[in-house]
Amino acid sequence: MDSKTKRLTALLLSLVILLVVGAIVLVNYQELIGNKGVNGEESAVMFQNMETEADGKVKGADLSAFLKDDTFFDAEEKIYDGIVQVTEEETDVETDVAASELTLMATSVERDLRVRIVDKSGNPVEGYGFKISVEGTGTYKDLDEDGIIYVSGLKAGDYKIVMQEQEGFDEVAAPLTVSVKANITYTPIEDISYLIKAESEIDTMTEDTDANDVQEKDADETQYTKLLEADQSGEPIQLGIDVSKWQKEIDWELVAAEGVDFAIIRCGYRGSSSGYLVEDPYFAQNIKGATEAGIKVGVYFFTQAVNAVEAVEEASMVISLLGDYALDYPIFIDTEGAGGDGRADGLDVETRTAVCETFCKTIENAGYEAGVYASRSWYYTMLNTDKINDYTIWLAEYRQTPLYDDHYEMWQYTSKGSVAGIEGNVDLNVSYLGF
Image (tube, rainbow, N blue to C red):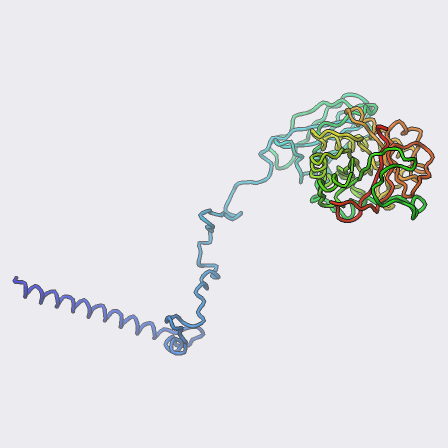
């Protein structure tokens, strides 16, 4: 064909294609407007009543409405940022610790056993009522399901501990033989860390009730509220503070510039209600900050131990928390009351004194100096001072001249002190150690 004929043929084909496409569009449009819309109304009427925006889109239309349609996505899996999230119903993988290897661990302080069922990481396995048999004594169950079983009142000797079968576990821990001690040896428990809790794990309102037990008769209006330059006789002294989480953030450089020589820092406490061992949340940053600022440091622990065994636990916790930090001042046990409701507030003098002795002996056996903190009235009525006077005595009495008639090496003279770098009140102290 010549070129004229080819052009004519192409034109005719194009016209045929246009006619076919037009017919298809017309048929689909008629079918569309013939269908009924929501609630039985004609779709044609619905379209006629819709307003449009300047860009031609229907006014008020929710273009993301499909996201609210639960049937729009595949129900078996959802994809977020390329990660397939499978629902619990779709997986046969168990997420408990049944596949973990269990191990028995045990310690004895005095005629007792504290048995732990731990996983591969050494953490107590919680959420199961494990049972153990202690040879010659009976079977014991983990009633609170914390992975720890405590047995007391045992005679000295070797005991074989056998773990019984537990539902959900293919195998149990291997048996363990432990020597039960007849008497306290005042030796720190090496693996005490498993008993230490963070404040995020407890109710601080009921547990941290460290009450200032300096009674009215131990304080008067003559007390100093500023850092001293010398004692009453003009002898040189070291000036110090004691702090805990209650002082919050501390600018230790400013504190040092104020002339503070030392700081006694709370490392932790035993819960007044539960008896949990709890780390003070500001301990690490306080001892680090004070040390870096050139301030000498010591630590104290607020006790609520009800017997000598718990005193060993408290001393062990302190030693564990110290790590590689060097101390210039002793480690003190704070024997104040907890407002009358503390688990140790009702102890008799003999038991409370034994707690303090045990704590201090355990601290000294670990290579540290030990001391006892209390108010004048507490020393007089709640402790047998003859049994603790060999340790550093830290007296709390808020008056210009203490009335306490026994010896003391440190004196906390006010709880209303003011020091730059610390917001609010802080306890102020003087130390005669080294003079």
